[in-house]
Image (cartoon, rainbow, N blue to C red):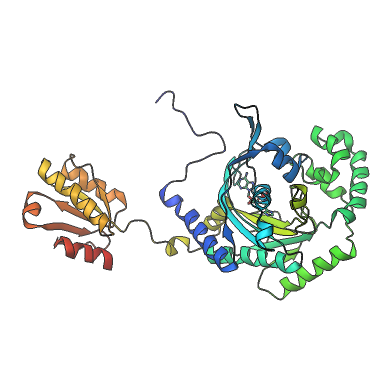
Length: 422
Ligand code: HAM
C-alpha cells in the first residue's frame, strides 16, 4: 500500500450509516418542497465561469479565491459550481419558465465546490439543498422560504435560529458604499491585496473578507434604508413575529455573495450568532435581469447539508436514527456446504427473495461456514438463513433472527412472511 491515491484535500467519503442522516434530510426536504409547491431541478455541475463571475460576483471571495476554474479542450473557461443560485437563474431564463407561469419555485440537491481551507464543517466539496422562488416581490415570499427552511430543520430534529437583516437596494446602498469606501481608505495599508482592489470596485465585499473582516466589519457605519426597503423589512418582521420561526434581527449579517437585495438571513443551530451557519439566503431582485431575463423578483436559500447533519450529531437533539429504519431488514444467506449444487441453490434463493421484495445478501459462499456466520454477524443484516444439502432436499431453511435471537427451520414462504412481518 505504498502509493495509495487518497481523496483530495477537503473531500471525503460518506458511507453506510454515516450517509443515513443525509438521506433523511434529503427525504424531508423533498417532502416539504412538495408541500410548499417547489419542483426539483437538476443542472450541470460545471458552467461557464462567467455565470458565477457575473452572478455571485467577481469581487467575492467565492469567485476570486475559491472557485475551481479550468479550461476545457476547446479552450472554454469553465468552473465547478460553487453555489446553485446563478445556475437556477440561468435555467429559469434558458428554459423560458417566466413565460410558462408568473411564479416559479425550484429546488435542488447536489454538490458544490469551493477551494476553501478545510476545517470543521468546511469542505471543498459539500452538499447544498437549495430553494429558489421567482416572481413575488412581496415579503410574503421571503417569509415562505424561511418557513420552509424552518419546517425542514424542525422535522429533522434541529432547533434553528434565523438571523435576519436587510441590506437595502442598489439605491440606498450607494451612499453607504461611499462611506464604507472612505473608512477603508483610512486603513488601506492594513488590508489584503484583494480588499485593496475592492476599495474602488466593491467596498462592501471587504466587510466579509475572510482575512480582513475582523478589521473591516467594525468600520461599517449604521446602514440607513430607503422607505421602500424599510417597509419591506417591517412587513417581513411582522410576518415572522406572528409565526413560529425563531428569528432575531442581526444587522451584522453580510452575505458573501453580491446579488442580494433587501432581505438577507443566515441560519444557525444554536442561539449564538457567531456559530457556524448551517444555511443562508435572501432576496435577489436584480439577478434575473443581470442575465438578460425579464425583471423578476426572487428569494431563496440553501442549507449546507454537511453542516446540518453535523449540527444534529452535535446537539443530540435529534431522532434521525430512530426515524430512519436502519438498512438492515435483509437476509444474509450462507451455505453450509461447499458444493456447487448447494451454492447455486443459495444464489438462486437470493434472486427469488429479491424478486419477492425481500432484501438478500450473499456471504462468500466458498468460505467455511464458521467464517460465513462471522460475516453474517458483522453485516448488519437482521436475519440469517443457512442452506445445506439437507435444506436443499427438505426445502426448509435454518433461519435466525439476530435481533430476537430466535432460530428455527422455515420453508421459503414462511421465511418471506416472517421477514415482511418483522
Ligand atoms: P452560502 O451562504 O454561500 O449561500 O451557502 C449556503 C450554506 O452552504 C452555508 O450557510 C453553509 O452552511 C454551507 N456551506 C458554504 N460553504 C461550505 C463549505 N465549504 N463546506 C460546507 N458547507 C458550506 C449560497 O450559496 C446561496 N446560493 C444561497 C441562496 C440561495 N441564496 C438565495 N438562494
